[in-house]
Image (cartoon, rainbow, N blue to C red; front, top):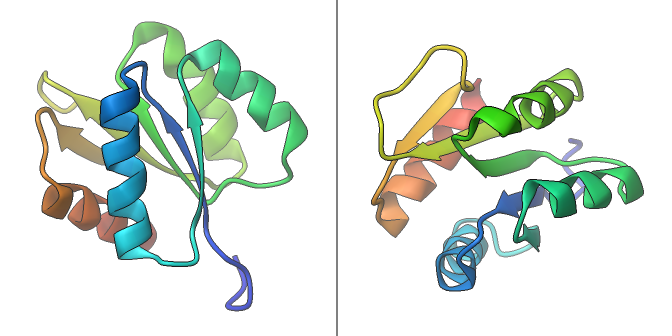
Length: 115
């Protein structure tokens, strides 16, 4: 991402309330961010087929998300994985435990940006 481009975020979350909270926190962190919310992995795959880049992705830790995470990682997308379980080295570079606060999400975005 060059300095003149706005960051593009993809958020996959089936709860619209949680997704809206995540989007609001991202916009607080980066006012010029473009945030796309998807309710399912299938919807996220459809979105990825239509857009040229994603800088950050916030995804749930699901076994059927592995292919999507590989696709995002190949395009150098920084991945934040949410889960109520223990971190796993194979899920992505940044782990965000559930439940999380806005400050925890902002910290995860910072860490993902450094990876």
